[in-house]
Figure 1 (cartoon, rainbow, N blue to C red):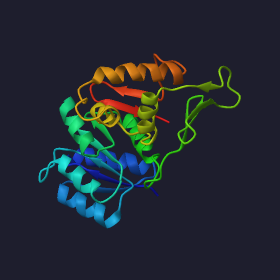
Figure 2: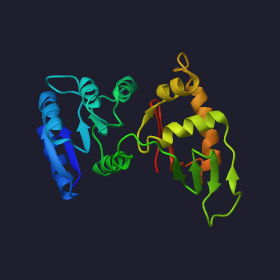
Figure 3: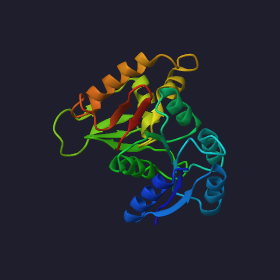
Length: 229
């Protein structure tokens, strides 16, 4: 049974999340403080953590750093802080996703399923299916899936390959735009968000069935991008 740790100092939200998670057959642990959360994570090794940033004894960003130092457990932040800087800080610290309160339970569980689909451990992703295209990172090919109509192969630029490789290695995870810019173009380019807008538009034209309504290459405005399998 998948084990979820909820960390929040709001009793009503803790109760609502616990009930909804158990109804979906998750095993649940709860904590109202950072100290209790870190102790629980050490004792029971959760499969994912739902974490509020506004904890009474320690800022949630520091909790993310400490959890990250212990392993690759997926972390979804649940916070009333809606500013882009807060979101980017949490994502840069190692959070996998960020959901602003108040939120819809269905949306939260969709995000949870996405982070739980990420490959365990550190095994490299070598092949992925994006819509009607089979992307082979080892061979450097983008081939149309068997049975679909149209061109059998696509060509991507070296920069498109770099961006796509980062996204495919983190399915369901929200990657800050500045992180992608730094990795692809190098330090000093973190504010060049227009680069990403241009390249993502090109990737969607090539890979998405309907580029105006992308299903796999998703933008979180002002924050970053995610690949949804």
